[in-house]
Amino acid sequence: MNNLLPGLKRFSEHVFPQQQKLFESLSQGQKPHTLLITCSDSRIDPNLVTQTNPGELFVVRNAGNIVPPFGASKGGEEAAIEFAVDGLGVSNIVICGHSHCGAMAALTGKVNLDSLPSVKNWLRHAQSTKKRMETKSHAFELHDVVEENVLVQVENVKTHPSVSASLSLGRTRIFAWVYSFETGSIAVYDPKLKRYLPSIEVREESEKDVSRFAL
Ligand SMILES: [Zn+2]
Image 1 (cartoon, helix red, strand yellow):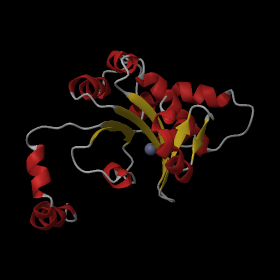
Image 2 (tube, protein in one colour; image 1 turned 45 degrees about the vertical axis):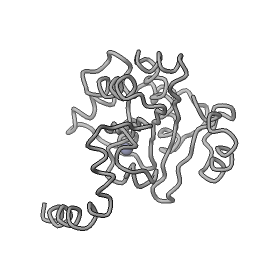
Image 3 (cartoon, helix red, strand yellow; image 1 turned 135 degrees about the vertical axis):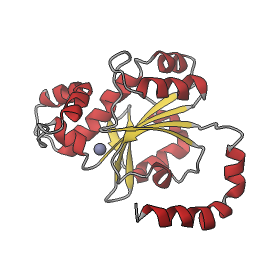
Image 4 (spheres, helix red, strand yellow; image 1 turned 90 degrees about the vertical axis):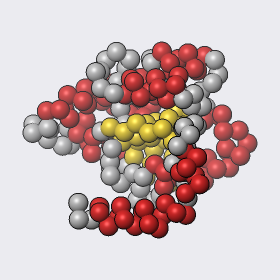
């Protein structure tokens, strides 16, 4: 807390005045363009890595950027997704995993969860990821699990009625990202090539047509 209080003071006295008009306009309501579902990991700063302002991203975070299939969980993800899609009308849904994800390490048995029963219970929503990895004929690394898990969660989010309806009407697009905080790069999944493209290739391709990355 000793570290936080000076930050609060610095924000209200120095940062807020520089963007006062933006914050005042946000008091009229929010119109985020993107629902970003990512991990709770402290090394991810959504607004920083996407270079967006307050009001642009509606963010859902949990351990492992997991989206339980519709009806499978009593958590808040269902309500948040419905509100973002039907209530706020976001036009993009991004599932973003990240390098060195502890939740994914735990999923593959690399972390002992005996003293973390709630985490163990939560990760059952990612069992499909584990099963998919076990069917691979080649050895895999943690980063492979992270990448696969994002694709599994993309399938899960499509089971939510608000999302499936919005997709069928062409109002929403879904994207799969993996952020590597140690390099500052975000890889984007290309459904045609069936692989993640590094940032540099994504920039070149997205100038032509960003919809090629929609899932
Ligand atoms: Zn994580």
